Each structure stands twice: as C-alpha cells, then as structure tokens.
Image (cartoon, rainbow, N blue to C red; front, side, top):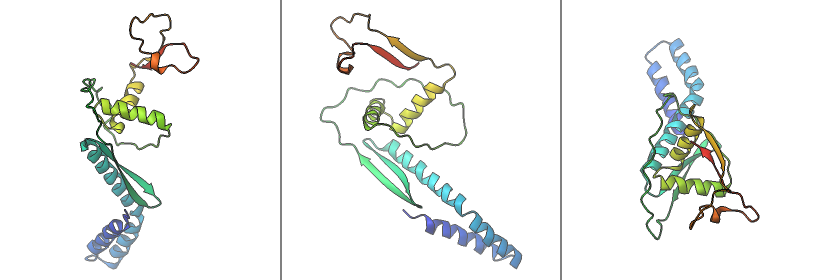
Length: 182
C-alpha cells in the first residue's frame, strides 16, 4: 500500500488552509508541509499497524501483519485452518498484572527459530490470545519487579505412571529441568 497519496493530501490541505493568509504565511505553510512529511508517514503507519493488530485480535483463526517494504506497506494475511479435532477449552488466563506504563507502544523486530515461533503460536492459541498479546504477557511477566526466574532440576523426582518429560528429552539427555518465570 502506497501511503504517499495520503501524505500528499495532508500537504495540499495545509497549504490550502494557508491560502487565506499573507504570502509569508503561505510560504511558511509550504515549508511546514514538507517538514511534516516524515511525521505524517510515521503516524499513518502506526495507525495502520494498530488497525491490523485489532483485526488480528478479532479473527478467530488467523492474523494480519503489516510490513514495511521500501516506503510502502505490505499486508500479510495468514489464515490458520481449523483443527480436525476440537481442542480442549483453554485454561483461564491468569490475571494480567496492572499496567504500569500508560505510554506509547514500541515496535521491535524479534528473530527466533521457526520451531520456537510455532510453539509460541500454539501456546498463544491455547491461551486464546494473539501471538503479540501472549508475547507481551511473557515479557511483562519476566520484567515484573517481583518475578522469579525458575530453573529446577527434577531428575531425582520419581514419576509414577506418567513422566511429563518423556517426550521432550533429546537423544542422550537424561536430565529433567523446569525453567521459566513466575
């Protein structure tokens, strides 16, 4: 999506509004219109990104991403096919910690292995959340001043009947560890 026509429209409107004033005001409006170009582009991109996030939150199976390609925006719509068997209902989400920051949102790029992304998407879906919302919760939990980073070795604990670690061990590894944030 090329946002240049929208930025140009804002510029024309500002210059047209200054037409009623003096020549000095018209020239100042033209200079200001060109100076505001980057800010207008950024504001439009942020609005479109927020809209895509809201659409994603409302989609039952899928997501909408906005990517910047040069000076143009590209939309990527992913639809997840419904599972053959219905999944058990997700456990109730833990109460969200109170928002400490009421400031602006920040956007980051995170590069992770595809397998990790797939597991994160599964966890987010199981929690009934978008991947973005789920990851914000994980980061928020890890950065909470009262959070505890847990790393427990459970190799000496006997598991009778069901061993929760049996399917997750790599070849040659016999240890049982639990790690994460509380």
